[in-house]
Length: 349
Image (cartoon, rainbow, N blue to C red; front, top):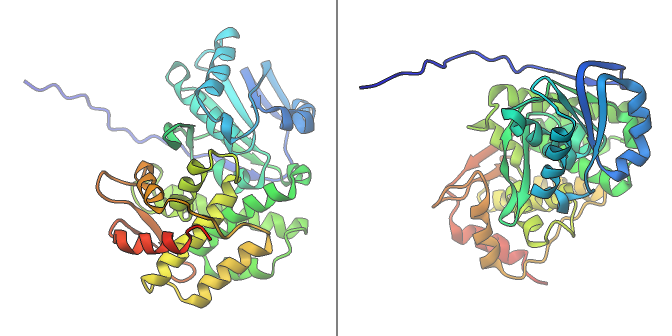
C-alpha cells in the first residue's frame, strides 16, 4: 500500500536587493535586530531611527568568526522565546557575514521558520554573504557544516556603512569581488585591475556588479546542485586554512584569497589557466594587501580536511577551478598526486 503526499508547489522566494542609502522600514510585527558590540556601538542608534515595528528588540552576540557557533545561536533563540516571538515575527541581521549567517539560521529553525531581513555592514557581506540565502554556523569539524537555505525577505545594502570599516576588513570583501570576476566576468576583472575603490561611485558600481553576478547564479541554482558551487572558488582551500588556524589568524576573505591562489596553481598545472593569468589574479589580490601565501606544515592533514567540505563526497573532493578569466570548471576528478604537488609547493618555507 502506498500513500502519496502531493507537495509539488511553485514557491516564489524572490526578493529585492536595494543598493542605496538605507530607507525607513516599517514592520507590523515584533522585530529583533541581531548584531554584535562593534556594529552596535557604531551604527545601532542610526538603524533604530530607520526601523519602526510593533515591538523592537536588540539581540547582541559576541563579535567574530570564533563565535559563529551553537552558543551564539542559543542567545538569539532564547531572546526570541523570552519576548514571545511567533511565526509572524522577524529578525534583522545587522552586521557582517557571521551575523547574517547566524541570524538567517536562527530564523530558519525558530518555530520551523520565520522571516528575516539582511542589512549588511561589511563589504564582504554586502557583495556575497547577504545574497543567496545560505545560513549556518561552524563547529569543531569545519565551517558552515550546520545550516540551511533560507532566503531573506529583503536585502538593504548601504555603502555608507563601509566608511567605518577597517582597511583589512574592506580588503577581505574585495577578495569576494575578485572571486566573482575571475569565475564569471573577464571584463569586470579587467575593470577591477585599474578601479579606484576609494571613490564612492566606483565602489557602488563594483558592489552592483558583484551582487548582480551572484544574483544571476543563485536564480539558476538556489540550492547549489550545480553552477552555484562555482561561487566557492577559493573556498575549498580557504576553508581548510580557516579550520587549521582555528578562525583566528585570517579573515574569511583573506583565507579565500590564499585559496584562490592555490586553485589557480592547480588550474595552471591542468592547463586550464596561463601563468600570465595566474599572475594577474595574484597581482590584483596584492593590490589590496591580501595574503597570497600560506605555510602548510602537514600536507597530509591538509588534504584529509578537504573531505569535511560540503561539496565533497566520501571518495572525491570537489574543486572549483578557473578556466582562464571569466570561466570556471567544477570537478571531482583531480588526482590526489596533483593536489599534493600543489600543497607541497605551499609547504613550510
